Image (cartoon, rainbow, N blue to C red; front, side, top):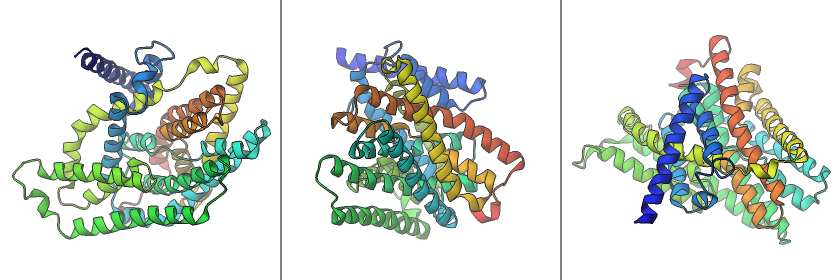
Length: 401
């Protein structure tokens, strides 16, 4: 009983911190997600210590709630994203996804090697620069009501491609680090499986729902449609992990499938209370995972500044070049939308630490970089979208219907 009461107290603290942080951020004209991440830093182990490292470890109740929160967030984003919309920006999204991986991987590897790491370790460090956190950007786009913009469709499409390529790169660097060499047959099989999963589920599922979605209302429960698509969300989130993809990719696909149903608008309304309850846990936990004590020295702060600049500039360059056909202003929006590393960078840093590749300081710097890019992106992206909406390249509505 005591254990259960401790968990409830922790959940209370995290939820209140998220609400206070979000409210302060919005009063400062910043997206609420910035305040939620900052709140995590404040109540986390490094400052107030109201959340301990044990409470945010993998598999704990708080960690599980955070995972469910980001899964539901990407599901809701998928609900506002139709397959036809992504098809229209497919070529641009592919270029953004590919260049958004290659440029950061190259720049990160060169920086690490220049700082004294051998090439096998440098490539592992470079992998932490690669993957974009779709959850951070998706929340900002959703808060601003910008999910129907062309730039948003490109960012979301590129994030899926980004996730596949990041997974493959991580497989390569782990193999090299372990001295196993590169198993090309295995990598090709993994790539084919991931692409096949996305194609079959995304395209096939959307067509089935478009053809007939009345069966969602057959059960007697008034919330049958919501219950069925949430089950689909959780199921596809799990299945996507079997293909080496992030769970949020499966959740996004589930939402995209549900967007083809005639119950779409009702589902969007019904998911809002769930999002209000669960998504703040993800962002607070993300902020609480940084260990500020490892960044106390001037040397560590200088290194963190350089690493963060490389992380921002490399993604910005890759995304900008990939989306240049949309025009310079929209390409800049896309580039910055791909900047946040968030939980993906944290996961790779954790793997590097457990494998003995990273020192505690390098680990802290990579984690801090991941979280700093997650905190820097929302206000800048919000400013860019408002500015672009006021006088830049706007979405042509007929193209998105």
